[in-house]
Image (cartoon, rainbow, N blue to C red):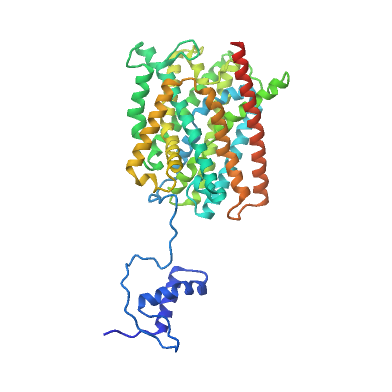
Length: 498
């Protein structure tokens, strides 16, 4: 026997739900819940004459929500328990890659004081650009950089961002693999053979040739690490990677201080030497190196999505940038102090000779081995973003790649194969990616975040934000245009001399 329910009972249920959920607008929420509560209680809408009709109660699943739930287009993130320290190490590892070895040459070009100031300025601009992305993403409930660009500039905005990440990251990882091959197996790309660590220890054999060493590294180091579907799973390898970078800084600083006390270190220049217009143009070639050294924007959303408390992302970014800036400044200063005007474009090559201290060869090997291991552990962090963005570029309407094991495996194996073959057969890839890497990096790090703020799809940008955004775009375009022009002239000049 059915019990007849009154409308007053329905109203009591609605009020109870509102009080439990804590909605601020009682009238609005009542209107949204009214029909659903009546359906659940078996009460139909009133008839024209004001009478109430009893209807059969509809059978419903207990988990059906009272209000509609927004379904995210870019995937569903089940894991949200990443720690603060793990997030800091993952973001720091994304930042500190191969760029750390090129910074001493930038300091040599700019001078110590302008060089260190530029490192600090680029770090502050990086923090501002990431803050732009984070604020817009949190406001719009956005979970990826590509989705944010799509919201601001449509399909072509998303494609431009994802293509830039693919170009930047695949170039960076080919360079990583080339570095590993040079350090472990040696190189003859400059016409002079430099012995690798394995060749120096055991002599030249087939098993320690470049192709075999890189194949073993790909199968036994890279393949297991890139198989993780969550970025937080790499937190321990990221911590080790940062520790190895610190080891390099400590050894470099220690050797420089010893030689300083022995009086065998020349006074480094504090400011650049300018002897004409060409020398001024040449200074701008240091800008892409500094910009590339801080590019981490493509992994910020992945780290943010895995946090239990998403308000932690801003202190995580600041902590990571402070840690990496400290490493950059210390590395640049002490490496330039140690090698002076003999500092090479890749300072790792300076550790292939006598350092002028006892046990020099031992310290050379420690530095090279620790840096090769550091690059190996950075590789999966950068690969994570590459795979995610390439999948979004090729399969924009498919479900998240972490939920499709077949697609995950095919894209992972294909990318590893392409990177391995490029590192084996195209060892002179540096000049090509000096252009594409610098261009893609400045788009990802500064131009795209500024464009999002200028479009302001969620109405959160202040006047100060927009002025900063315009300034970032102007500085990025001008400095990189001059840098690309100067690089092109240097390449043509070298060809003419040859």
